[in-house]
Amino acid sequence: MSIVNGYMRVVRRVLPSPLSIAVLLTLLTALLAIIFTEPKAGQNAFLSIADYWYMGFWNFLEFTMQMMLMLVLGHTIAISNSVNKLIKKITGICTSNAQSAVFVTVFSISAGYINWGLGLIFGAILARKVGEHAKEKGIELNYPLIAACGYTSLMVWHGGFSGSAPLTVNTESHSLVNSIGIIPISDTILSTSNIVAIAATLIILPLFALLLAKRPFKKSYPKSLKQHTEKQTSAIGAEQLDHSRLFGLAFGLIFITYWIYLWWSNSFSLNFLTLNTINFILFGFAIAVHGTLHKFMAAASKAILGSTGIMIQFPLYAGIMGIMNYSGLLAVFADFFINISNHNTFPFFAYLSSAVVNVLVPSGGGQWQVQGPILMEAATKLDVAHAKTVMALAYGDQLTNMLQPFWALPLLGITGLKAKDILPYSILFMLVGGTIFLSILYLF
Image 1 (cartoon, one colour):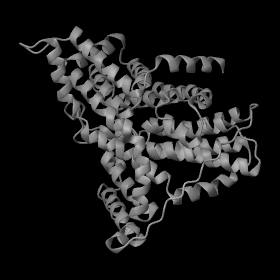
Image 2: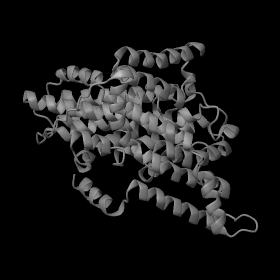
Image 3: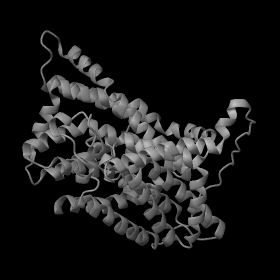
Image 4: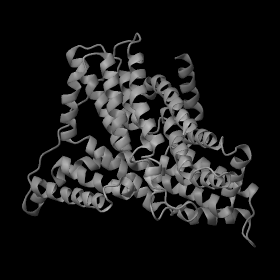
């Protein structure tokens, strides 16, 4: 634990905010482009880089909206009364610290595979509800461990059904379609190797949580929260539509019905899943579980605050990608990976580099846009399967979320804990998960 505490002290001193990191990466990329590439004919290097940056700055607007919706809608579903009632019922089976750790880990991982926003918020709410249940029933609980178990969803999400990289390359309009084509999710998310990875994490991580839970601990519980009651206002005239369950449910079911039609028209294959189709079903489901448009909008208003980082930072990552693409820096980096690896070792280097980059670029979508083209270019030249490279990036990206406190902020807010409380456990989960993902890349 002393090593972890030392790590936290170093992080507090040397690691800037995520926004500052995006700015520093922009400046670093510009500097590297000036050093290693040639400017436009008749233009100095600084103006060339500025042009490339501006050309790329707006390229991710659609992608940014897709990512924001995925987080907001997942969060909106997780805080619905229906989901909260379900959580309250199922927490009744938690009668010990060990049972609680296994329970929260299994459900958090499962939710994370379905949707990263849902998994993040569901895991946080589940951990808190388990803590409140234990406090009420007098069950001795290691609350920081339970919260870390709730965070495990972020270590598996990129290999799940909301994974940015696998879903993006399954889209006809993705930025690399001319060079790598469309990669169906049957080769990535639903591949044999990834299904084995899913099964392994669902078995091994809960068992590891059980071992941690059986070690001596200082009992702790969540602090009480001040209750907030929404002021009720009477609806008049057309405003009553917002409070109509029939109207809200009917509209939500339109989304769900059309999504089922899309599934049917694709012969019940899941290859039709893209960022848009995932968000479409989440939109309808979010309205349906809240019942009325009024409740849905109230929940979405709370959830949207968590998407601020995506909205502000993604244009900066797009600018970075613009500099790399238009200056030729992308090809320079791709050649570097080719020079240090071969056909057999490249997946490992792709995985390792993705894990490192994620510490500085805490966004799977942003990381794919920045790093994906580099890895795909290198994979093509080394004759490595593009699908395997996509999953190597996905595994590395999701792994070091256990080190990066950016995405833990919603969980910390809900559980009332600090990053230093959960990091000693999340780092251990990372080591176990890293072994699983490396084994999958080696065996398949």
